[in-house]
Length: 130
Image (cartoon, rainbow, N blue to C red; front, side, top):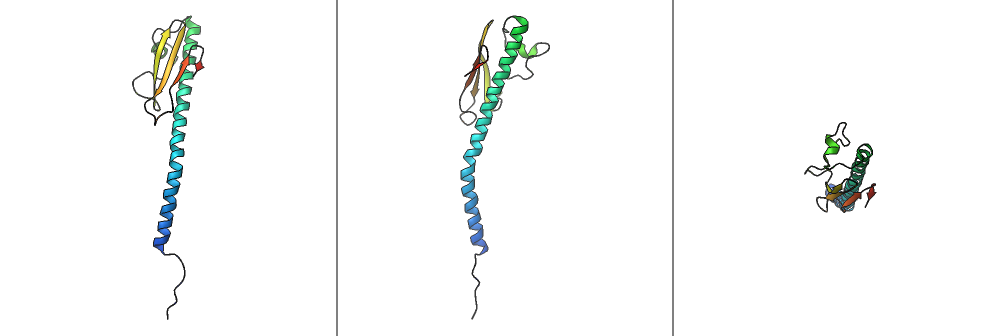
């Protein structure tokens, strides 16, 4: 008479490991996606503040905001080192100077899709971020 040892087979163990991996992936994936959205939103807000600071510096030295937003990048020395206003998105956002006058501005950061950012952000004269 043969005696069998009690225990799990390799196949049973692999199935359990697979199920645990699947469940953990389903739980962790939304957190990873949410983290990316939060990071992109934070990048957009920080970029808007950088652009606002550049505009305020330009105003301080020239007594008016620039007529063209690209002046911030082409001035010597440049007020901005990056061209945020080109057509390519930056971390899922596009940036646009929607209103630029001698003494006021409105800059908008818009996500290219709902998977890239949670909402649009704007910054206006004086660095008011909304």
